[in-house]
Length: 215
Ligand code: URA
Image (cartoon, rainbow, N blue to C red):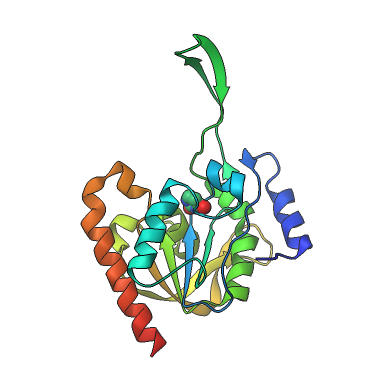
């Protein structure tokens, strides 16, 4: 996605003071059947500028392929477009020296709000038939904090989504209505293998919905 320069500058300004690194644009075609909304890029994505190109990305691409989707026909983005990191001091066991490391972390509410103009712009430009959110962060960015992935995964929502208010300091419901399918984040499987069956089922549900929409 080529964002207008003013928009990128605005988000850079809104992100001042946060521990965020790099900028990775959303990728994919305009007017696709599906837009995927994840959490935030990680270290791998900052290196190669491809959304979901790390370990979670491998899981995601496999799931997409299982219902006939590819990077070429799907728009992929996330709630935050820079890598959130934390700063940790730890002992390197090999060298026995203290070192500072900068691991990935989940974006916080303020960072998600700071980056909101980007996702709003992407939605307005990409105009996907269906939006699938990946994990709680993407889900709550679009539908609000009451939504929980553990309860809503694999269901189909149709209605307004949250967008930045005119004053750009909070969210408001959009006038336009969207079809949103909450999915687990592909990395969820790394922490909880028992989710595997549910994840497979949800992707089958999404595949059927996409088929129906295509008719
Ligand atoms: N998780 C996300 O939400 N996005 C990425 O690009 C990578 C991991």
